[in-house]
Length: 211
Image 1: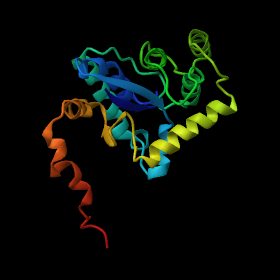
Image 2 (image 1 turned 90 degrees about the horizontal axis):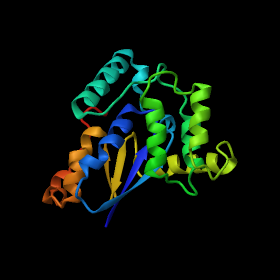
Image 3 (image 1 turned 180 degrees about the horizontal axis):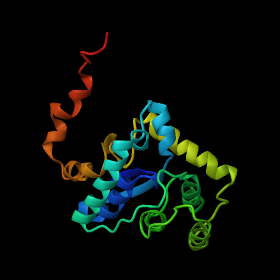
Image 4 (image 1 turned 180 degrees about the vertical axis):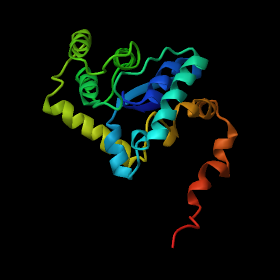
C-alpha cells in the first residue's frame, strides 16, 4: 500500500482546503496518509521565498481565491479575523497529541477547523483553551520535545525539497498545492506520464537570465 506524507501548517488556507478535499481526491485508492506539521515561515526563510502577505495585492487575491475554491468544492471556509497569525500554538498542540512527528487525521481536523471555520481570532484565548482541552494530548505543548519535533519536521522537509504547503510526498516525488491533487491521484493510479521525460526534464533546464 502506498504511503503519502502530507506536509502542512495550519496557517495555510490551501492546506486546509486540501485537507478537507483529500478523501474525495483519493477515493477508492489503496493508500495511507501521514499528516506532518511544519513551520511554513521557516521554510520560506530557508528557501528565500516571499510569503503572500508580504505582497498586499497577492494577499488580497489569495483570500478571494480560497473562498471561491471553498464555494465550488463545497468546503466551508470562514477565514480568521487576523491573518497571518503566529501558528506556533496550533503546531505545538498538534504535536503534543502525537508521540512522534505525525498527527492523526482527527487531530488535524480539529485544529484546521478551529482556525478556518467560524471566523474570529485564531488565537483567541478561550478558543485556544477549548481546543487544548479537546485534544488527546500526550506531551506538554510547550515542552522541549515538542519544540524539537517541530524543528526536526521542518528541517527534514526543507532538506527533502519541500518549499510550501500543502505538499504531498509520494515515493520521493513532491506535489505542491491544492490543485496538485488530481496529479497526485494520477501518480497513485500508475499514469505512465510519470515514467516519461516530462517529470524529470524541466528542473534540469538552466536559466537564460543568469549572468
